[in-house]
Image 1 (spheres, helix red, strand yellow):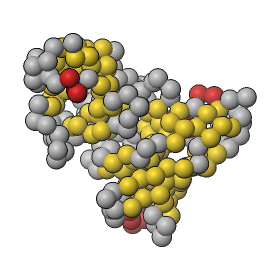
Image 2 (image 1 turned 135 degrees about the vertical axis):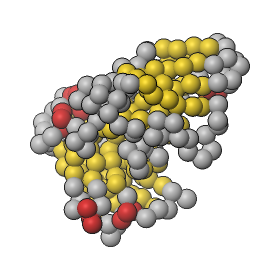
Image 3 (image 1 turned 120 degrees about the vertical axis):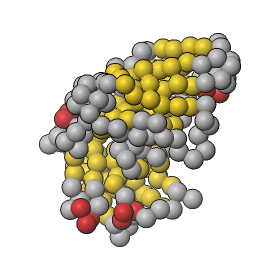
Length: 110
Length: 119
């Protein structure tokens, strides 16, 4: 199972919006609506931010939103806060009871 | 409060074995699909293994690099998840997280336990 492709880095200034992409194939991202996104601060445990492509768990700010087009999913963070600076990982169901993650994107809030 | 607490990590030589455990509380363990996800130092997340519920036959699935070497199991009476790791390789060095959730997403994570495979 190949990892999903994410840009290694992304950045934005406070108040701006930034979008992180996650590219897979028709066998994972494109084939199922089971894309999830995780935020991980340095030395901390990953936190679920988005599931089923667009849904937010309770407690996650609505500044975080997810979408998908074809084999590419995206996470958009609107109105950037300094505390949004973290690593972000996408994940997807990949069929045959397999799951796959992206390589991660380091988001810097300038 | 929902809690997942891993134990059993440590230093082991290549070819050796280690058994990880995850003690759980605060949710209905018997109804939960449980997984292990690992993160090598400075690297990204990698799903390792998953076990379904007893009514679903405790079906197990593994990522390709660990098939035949790792075995995931559960003890519903103790609300504990286990991972038996044999024939360990240096590339298995990682923090191993116990995690659960639904819709193929991981909602709850333990703090992780570090496994170091080195001679």
